[in-house]
Amino acid sequence: MSLGALTSLAAVRDQRPPTKQDLGKSTAPEMVGQPASLTDILLSQVPTELVAPYTLVSAAIVGAVGQPSKAMPKPDQLATLRWLAFGILIVATAALVWEGKRRKAQGGPFPLLEVTGAVIAATGWAFALPGSPLIPYVHGALLTITPLIAAFAAIACSAFIASALQGPRGRIRVARTLEPPVREAAPVLAAAGNANMSQVISERAKGENMTIGKLHVQSDGRLNGPASLSYNVPFPCVNGSYGSGAMMGVVMHTMVGNLPGTISVFNKPSYQASAHFGIAQDGHIHQFGPIGKGWIAWAQEAGNQAWYSIEHADNANPNNPLTDAQMTASAQVVECLSAFAGFPLQISDDVNAKGYGVHNMGGAAWGGHTCPDLPPHHVRSAQRAEILRRAAAIRSPVTGQSGKYVADGTKSLADVAASSGRLLENIVWLTAVQHPGGFGPLEAKYFNAGDLHAVMPVGMVYWLPGY
Ligand SMILES: [Zn+2]
Image (cartoon, rainbow, N blue to C red; front, side, top):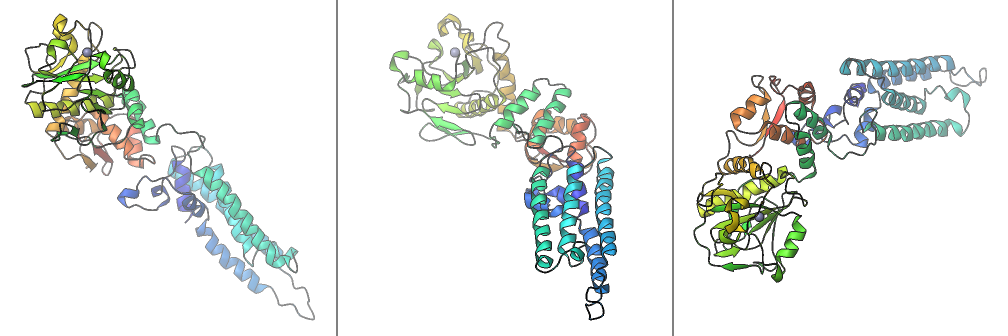
């Protein structure tokens, strides 16, 4: 390792924690973005470019020292030359780390930790060699022990500094609730025109990075596929009956509470209510009874027989919007039910029109509820449009395979979003989570500039989500 690696590390630490790639290690695709280990950084502190010539010079000095003889029992140890060579090594180390960092980061704060680490590593190296400037002053057993103690002390100090160098400059050891690129992406998205995006990004950053895709109905009536799913015990739950046939669609409900409480009451025979599905804020789906077996959930009275029902957690406030994860999970369930029962992926606000309806559209015959949101029904009811957009994308994959792309220098991220049918924030989010140790220099520069309509530079990596 080298001054080159250490100065790269010094430059990126102005922005974020260093990765293996920053230290010139492990450029295999799956390793890109991995945080740099303690060993990587420890090794990077040894200024090999200077240590190699210093070793040659100090060997020459040692060679020039005369052998003890009768005439000269204590030959001159050339202490002045030793100190001179040592001094040049230390000054050059400090100067080159500072200058290298200044070039790579175009200025910024003085890399105190990096300079200290390199100076200590160089000192340890110099003191461990036979050319050590300490040698003229020690005798007997100390001749052997002094270089070893010096080397050990230098390694101990370097390890301490290396652990501090794993974090970004100035925020060392700050607890990270969000991964750095996710934290970086949030304000970019907010600036790009979606004020809710910082929150969406935070919610997603907490959630599982799960592949989104189609669910299917198993032969036992349980939904299965790429989602977080649980099934009621007993299955189906006690509140329900049999006798449904052709289905009109699915109805959105809101819990006025959260999933655990809803599961609890739906399992009490006295409660006399249920639904086919409950979806928590984190996108977890709980299924109360089978699909395709004629099972009827008791969710919307006159609408029970021909409509499936999904309860969505709202933390006791129906005007809390569905979370991003809830919308995706709802889209997966709606897509699956639509494919299974043959109703279209469209909004229905009429009990006689097929599609994705809401509880309140049934009026008194459906129990006279405001569910899933309070008048003027502009929050959860209105989120069906985005849920259906996602459902359609899950059914017919949008243009272009999901996964990793490398920019060719002709398109902006906004162009990519428009032509692929993805939402811009979904692309930014996935690109952020795919860089767990921090964006690479191209990505960081692009996102920090904040203009998602600017053409991406050749080589910049971005990711298309599956929906
Ligand atoms: Zn309802």
